[in-house]
Length: 86
Image (cartoon, rainbow, N blue to C red):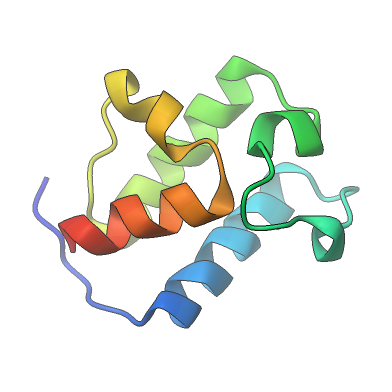
């Protein structure tokens, strides 16, 4: 997959939060800190996390292979991972 968009860190951060709202609508994302584990804080299972990452990958045009899921487990790590590949 070739990155189809370029965006600022803040824009990407907001896009990620919007995707997370769709996944965990009952979660209070205001409490989510940059280095919190996303799955733990949002109480989502591996399948939901996989689904979230697939949808995000399509949105930004950057593939996140399953072997890298451990590298993108926080908001900060996910943002940095995507920005480095855009």
